[in-house]
Length: 114
Image (tube, rainbow, N blue to C red; front, side):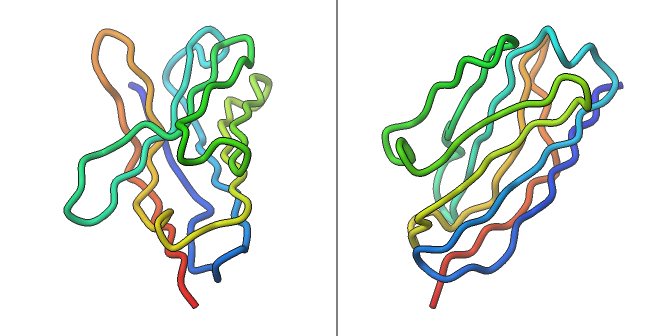
């Protein structure tokens, strides 16, 4: 079965960096587009970044030029490098794939605060 396991979240000061990872299993990772979403308290879950199976990225305007999505198809891993973090980036970050249905990881908390 599809499994997505995120890691790498934590507490960071404004202007800092974090790298999130997502370990994928249970499907042929290399042929599917993958996404990162985030959900702040009391808000809807929003798309942060997507990457095609060939590695072409796309970003939400709020994170463009600060975040970088990447993947390693040899390791079935998805990454999100987050730089110049702001308090408004505070959220639970989720790894996601849509096949016949939506699959989500358990999420990893990112808190940006001084």
